[in-house]
Length: 245
Image: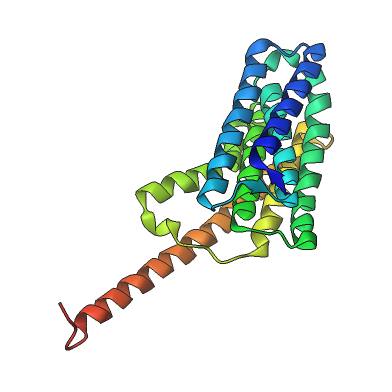
């Protein structure tokens, strides 16, 4: 276990070193500040999340997730600096590949060390969402701004939950979600690498978005049905003879 302060300090230190190294590619000050700001927000969110769970330490899998989220912060800095051009692509793709590989590692580490937790699951999901958002912002100018829907889906779902509290219901585990998330990341990295014919990549992005819509749509439908079931339960209780006021 790693104390949260030491974990975040190490993460921020690594982020600063990576951003400093990227200045050799011409990374300007503003994008570097964006990346560092993402890192600070990350640490604050992790600290608050752990505190809400009554913990102050990161498990082995959490450390892996923190590492790939730091890489996401570096990617965010690269993506918002259009002046870098092609040199940035040569860094974005390898970093994104490493982040995707680590996404497959943290779950295995959690199971191997028996340190899985509700926080770890949430942290993993938010790390996935952030990486997809950054990659979609990078790919969108080349294939259309509709690609942003891939990166914005998780956040749109969160905003919708504010307007529709029934979306806050705890969703059952579905392995399919992890498959769909992995597909989004792989397709976006392939699009960023520009290694396939444009029409093939375009079709892959459309298919990835369709899978994402199906996955979120299934969750929304499940939550809606649970809402109706809860409402019916309340009505039955209200109509029960002899029920106390």
